[in-house]
Image 1: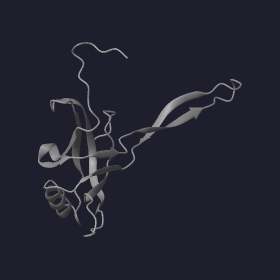
Image 2: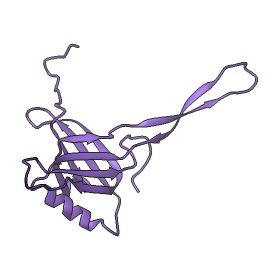
Image 3: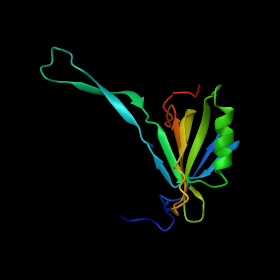
Image 4: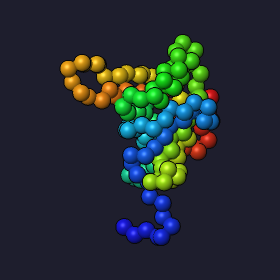
Length: 151
């Protein structure tokens, strides 16, 4: 794989999450799962062309995002946002930014219609020396610029 001298490389361990145009900063996370899109392919057979079929991209599906990190001072921001959205969840927009070693943005995913699904923290045990991990799950309505507008 070749790169030009101006190619910016992103590190998988450097990314930030923010919501509502930067109003809510959820901080950096150690892991993001579910940043993907799947197309349900539609096929069409005319019936008079033998076995010829035409394939078209159908609707898109986006799985829920699962964010994981060590509990930290940014966890207070998450708790505050969850409190705001506990019973009257207002779908919002959000961004996941992948950063280079100098914390400069390499790529971003602008998410539409985000709502919280689940938050958890690992159980506490006084006899062990483990890092307390928090997990936040978010449902969203996509990150592609495909005509689907935020609600």
